[in-house]
Image (cartoon, rainbow, N blue to C red; front, side, top):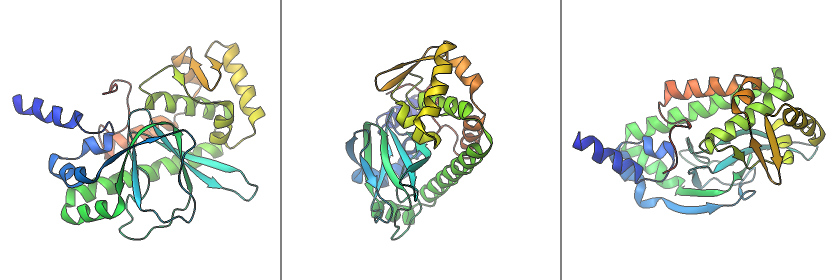
Length: 254
């Protein structure tokens, strides 16, 4: 029992990133000397398409990074959000990797960064570390697949509810979600007017309120009922492949 308590203390002493906390003590020790804290502000650019990917960024706590695909009409379409369940940049590169998408900070807060070269070197020393990051890459791919299907078959209302629920999960269930109408429109790939109409409907039903720069969820159960099941599908896959990594409301901030 004492050993388990010591192991738990060692894990919670790490940055509040579930992927890093999922690593064994030996694997984490390979990375720890090269991890550096950084603060990300909402809108900060991590990578543009074509940039050489030299750094892995691990969101911590409620911080979120966003993958955006530029389009010929000048708009960026948001594909997935990455929070403390993962990392962005150079996950499985093992060599030079140009960024395909634009990656930005969605919700500001703490991150830790790691040179890709150090991650690649650690993978050559540890099969289990290599396996963890390969499995995380599989989970990220599942998110992309699910997002593609969601955009094709679900209504704007369902997708709006899904994104807000997803953001709440990554902010430890906090009812105040730092999303604007404009940011939601980017997530949905629609004009701001469409998002505003859905939000007005939710407000009229007492599900949420809007504040300057944020959304206050009044009835999370009703919001969940209005959402599609895409988040649940992704969480289920994470649980199957990387148990305990996907954020839950029970985890709480450390």
